[in-house]
Every structure is written in C-alpha cells, then in structure tokens.
Image 1 (spheres, rainbow over the protein chains, first blue to last red):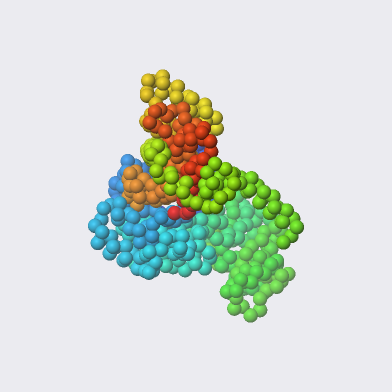
Image 2: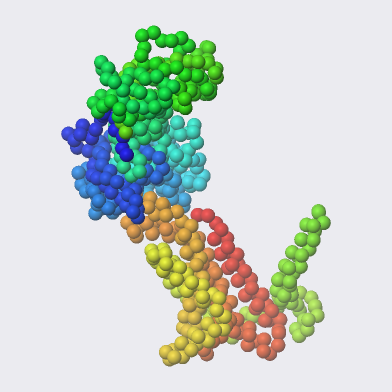
Length: 378
Length: 257
C-alpha cells in the first residue's frame, strides 16, 4: 500500500552514522494484542538535537516515548542511550527524564520541592540542590513562585515547572510528550519559541512527541513522521515538507493539492501527466525514474507554490485554469479554494496585502515551475 | 419564600427532628437537676462531675480508649497494606476481594459477635481485652481498606511514573509520593475506626470477658437499674467524642492535598 516517490530523500539516518548518537533506537516492536502499536521503528538522535516524532493520535508515538523512558518494554529491538542498552535498566536508573503531557506535578509539593525531587532522590547535598533548583527556575522564569503549590499556578507556569523538574537533572535526553498540547493557542506559540531557546541555550537533546505539524516544524532539527506504528520518513522539517516520500506524509505536513492520473508520453526532461479527470488537460511533470507510461500516479503541489493570475501566463506549460469557489480571508493571508476541472478543489494563497482580491466565480490561471510538484506512484 | 420551598423546608425540619430529637432530649436531661424524674428542675453540671468520681466508670473509659487505640492502629496498618496490595493484583482478584470486604459490613453484627466468640472459645483463648481488640480489628479492616482504596484509585498513576522517572525507587515512590497523598485518607480512616471501636456494643458484648468492660457495656449495665442522669451525661460525652471523630474524618476526606 505504500506509495513511494522516486525523488531522492536527502536526509537519511546513514548521514548520522559517523557521529555517535545519544539515542539509538533499533527496530523496536511493541504489540498491543494482535496490533503492532510500534512496528520495527528505528531512529537515531544526535547530542544537542531537537528530534520530533510527528503523527496523528494512535500512531504509536507515545509508546515509543514510553519505551525509551522505560515504562513499557519492547517486544523486540533495542534501545541504546550513549551506547548502552537500556532494556534491563528500570525507569529510575535511565539517564532520561520525561515531561508528561498532563505534567504530572506532585500536588502536595511546592514548585521548589517538585523541581528538587530528582536531585533529592539521587541524594545530592542540600546546598547543591538549592543552587541547581534556583538556576533552573531562573532559566524557565519561575523565580518568585518557589513556594506555590501546582494548583496555584497557571497552565503555562505548570508547564514550566514540568520542564524545570526534568531539566534540573541534566539528563542525557529530555523526552517531551505533547509538551504544549494543554496550552491555549497564544501561550502555545510563545512557549514554542521559549522552549526552543531553552533547548539551544542548555544544549539539550530532546525527543518530542506531537501531533501538531506546525509545532514540530518550527521547533525541530529533524522530524520523524509516524503512522500506524511505523516511521514513514525522517528528515529536516524542510526536507519532509518539500520532499514527502508518501501521500500520507504530504497530507499530514500541510495542504496537499492533489491530482490523480496516469503517466503519459515522455518528454525532454519530464513526462506528461494524464489526469483522471477528463476536464483537466495533460501537463508536463518531472517524475524521475520509475515513470513507465500508463502507471497510476498522484501528483501533488503545495498551495504556496501555486501562482494565480487573471491573464494567461506566457511561456508556461505548467499551468491549469480554474474558478474561484471560496475566498477565506485570514488577515495576513487570503486562502482561495479553486475548482480545477470536474471535482478537484485546490487551495492557493495570496498575502493579505493584495489590493484587488479575487472573488467567487472569477476565472483564474494557476501556474508553477516545472519542478514544484511531487509525484507519488501507486 | 415560595410556598413550595416552605413545604420542603417543613418536611426537612421534621425529618431532622425525628433524627436528632432523642439525642437532643438525652443531652438536655443530662443537665437536669432533678434526680429521678423527667421534670425540669433547673440546669446543673453535677452529673458530669459525678462521672469523675465513679471508679468503675473511669476503668471502663480507660478500657475503651485502650481498645480503640490499639485496634485502630492494628486495623489501619493491616487495612492500609491490604489496600496497597490490592492495587497490584489482577482485576479479577481485586473484585473478589472487594466483595469479601463488603460482606462483614452487611452481615448482622450479632452474628459477627457470636462467630468471634465461638472462634475464641474454640481456640481456647480467654475472653478479655485481647479478644475485644482482635474483634474490633476484624470489623474495622474493611472500613479502613475501602476508605484508603477509594483515595488510592483517585490518584493519578502518572504521579508514580513521574517519581520513578525522576529516579525514585519503589520505596521512595511510596515514601515521597503515594504516602503523602494518601495521608488525609489514612487519618480519616483512623478517626472512623477509632470512633466505631469506641461506640461498638455488640461485638464487644460477645468478646469481652471479666475486666474488659467498655463504656457502652457499662452504660448497658447501669441502665438495668434505671435511667439515671449520670447515664445521660456519659452518653452525651460519648456522643460528643463520636461526632467530632466523624466530622474530622469527613473534613480530611474532602480536603484535597
């Protein structure tokens, strides 16, 4: 069922093998009954890297995190941290700390005591605990709230305590389970920036699980897209967004304007795409190897790659005509839903600064550069 | 006030009177100066003072307090451990144990008393303070277990995981997270167990031997020679202590951490 494009995937884990990774996950499997919640997942995380596992709920990403933390055992595979297998190491002896989605702050302890908990368990001398807790609280901007109980804090403050409670132990890896999901939109955006700057400042190695693609793209050095227990693609946010290997990845990382069809005749450096919708004329598409005439494909292009014009663009074969169906004004930009051919609805965007916006019913030319779209073979 | 809410209020008031009427009468007459009559002869505290000079009564009080204290410690320890242990069991076994815990609460207490007496006699254990304490531990274990278990099940399991994640071993998780969070429930259970033990008549009646007379037994034996104002005073005191115990327990259980 997997549909792979032949466009080269630049980022792969081979590029990491020279530098010794902090985390090395080797083909872990975790079965829940007859279903594989985690199905042969492998990835590596470098020191100081912010690595996100992105996927819809039920993709198995939280299971991966819990296996790394030691709360679940894999049915197969291995978890290495700093070169050491963790399979026989209980959670309290692993050099990782987890920031829980629900924060799981100790309600009977103050902010200070919550943050000091890990150091106290390791019997760090009191004076040192004091100093390190204060340093960490300064870093997450919670100075002055040391004596509060979690119930007396706002959601954003609780989030910071949860973070500080993990960071203070200087773990080899910080595990983040949907760290910002419980915050409202504005706070969430502010915390994205802050979390990222704390991570860079402290040189933290982070593995973050999220279903929020924008959050993952903005914070991560690399993203792994997970779906149905498997990892479909690992790469930098730009690589995964621009060069998705499957239609699922393409759709999950943003709007994917799609057109199913068949491979037509070969041209100079492209093939003709024969759309399944007979109202849409054929146009040239770069397909790479694997393009044999007649093969079923789906072609996809990102909205921001589509240019709109009222006049027919000159010297462009990469072009279709459409009719504006809906105009969605969103402030900084305007989104248009455009009917292309019979039943295909595409999205295109203009910045909000456009003086003469299009109106529903307007005919429009959509054009793009030859290499802008992606082809997915079936 | 709307007519309907007036009606509701009147019925509520009647119900409360029905519940608390006898108690109010008892407490009122414990202050009555008249000795052998139900007529009011002015207020006095002399019956309370008289209690202090009754040697037998003081001995019974000492017995009651000792039994309540020891049986509470015993029942809370065993019941608490049972509640913690049940958490680790498979669900099916938990359900079976839960049924077993409710049973002693619903069977008639007379039967419990007789059963305990027969058991002690069978194993040739002389009836006395020890047998009363054992009997009280038996009927208090289900109460304690159910109360602590209720709290335990409300605890976020993530808290224990978070503690383990931060380096706590099993004992540290219990010592620094589970136990402090259970503390209100434990003290609530202590107060209830203490109060129930202090007030118990039936099980005590069947398991007590010579020298193990408790306050409720004493009241019962005094009443055979007529209701005296001393009994009223003693009952009022017992009542006061019980109500404080139950109120304290309710407060602790409702309190968040």
